[in-house]
Length: 271
Ligand SMILES: Cc1cc2nc3c(=O)[nH]c(=O)nc-3n(C[C@H](O)[C@H](O)[C@H](O)COP(=O)(O)OP(=O)(O)OC[C@H]3O[C@@H](n4cnc5c(N)ncnc54)[C@H](O)[C@@H]3O)c2cc1C
Image (cartoon, rainbow, N blue to C red; front, side, top):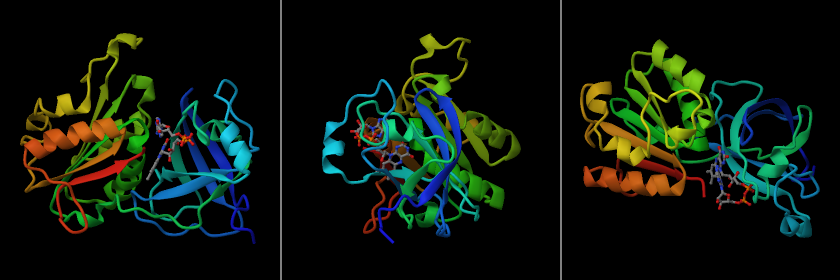
């Protein structure tokens, strides 16, 4: 069997906004591998797959003739299901996403037979609290972790700080708000950076994640300020947000986690 055969099928698609879609994908004729929440799969399409109307031309991929492959964090729970879910942002100049946005339910694509990645809760002791900070589709790996671990009844505190330009770009907002009501150990803070465009007045926090963090919101949310001795912070999405959050966290004594030097800041840069 060719390793580039289109080996998976799109079974479900939700258009969250014109620039964001949720895709559920099932393997065709093979079993989904087990994975740890926070890991990613690689999705691929051939260059001849149609591109979304209005996207930029992509002469380079067409010339190679090779499958176009990119990494996507899994959003679904790791409790075995027949599908895996992804949350994808459109990049008009990109090679793959304008093609993914043209997929319809029933269409075939390529999915890596193994899922991988180190951006998981495996390195965090069970007694530590966890703050998940994301911009845009950076929420994806946290959805898998929360869908898996909140249901399983972890005792630690979890919080999500999710930043986006507009409220309609805050994917999974309803589900996260529901988790906030359902689980005493979970808090959800959506943050909008351009509130002037909202149709209804935005009553939540505004601006950038790092500016919100330095207002010490956890004094109210948790009743105490997160400290390196009791909290790990995960950062995912836009590299600029990650850089800015890393700076403010390091000023408070948090350290980047690496294999050799355990720390409390865990990062997944999407580009
Ligand atoms: C471990 C990992 C997990 C990832 N998980 C996700 C995910 O869950 N959802 C997702 O949408 N993307 C995710 N990405 C990014 C994804 O792999 C692609 O880079 C992205 O979809 C763009 O692909 P493209 O071929 O359309 O653009 P390319 O031709 O590869 O162009 C890349 C450019 O697109 C921009 N870009 C890349 N990702 C994004 C994004 N998410 N939002 C806005 N602009 C972007 C950057 O400017 C980047 O330089 C992940 C990346 C990594 C490394």
